[in-house]
Length: 229
Image (cartoon, rainbow, N blue to C red; front, side, top):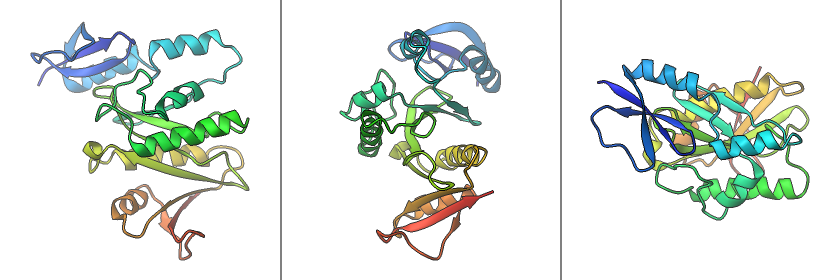
């Protein structure tokens, strides 16, 4: 199947089947070709997962720390700015396209935690919430992030995927990327993640990402998984 590279008004790029009606707000770039060729073209055109308005704001504010961006085979993991989190926590879209049209309840909770930390002066850039963009269409399919900056050599990760995006390996892909990035940072030797006993899907994600189940549970009775060097 031939594909086209399309762009929206926020200067985000996506892959789209040729001959199909374009989604609202998107226009053709004139670039068409095989799927992988188009994905390579997108990587060259758009090496920052933020909308143009956010990129401009970051450039204009020299005091703001750079937004961290990770890329996997099928996803962009892009750090959430505190001002975006304020909108997301209330159910807003922050100008992004979400699978399911809006942030999940879990994503709103994560955004609320980020805002609380930022307001208290405890937010550490790079160690907050990340949105998972599907590279093929620039839609946000979920969120993943840290419960706070590293403490005593350890950091904790949590994640959530839109129901329609589950079962495709996205969470494993993103968790492996973010966890191994953590272990490359100075002073971090352990990454942990927790889940309930009945959440077998999350357990499988952690296992496929290389985490090992610990024999002891956390104070709330949750299963604890750990990844180390």
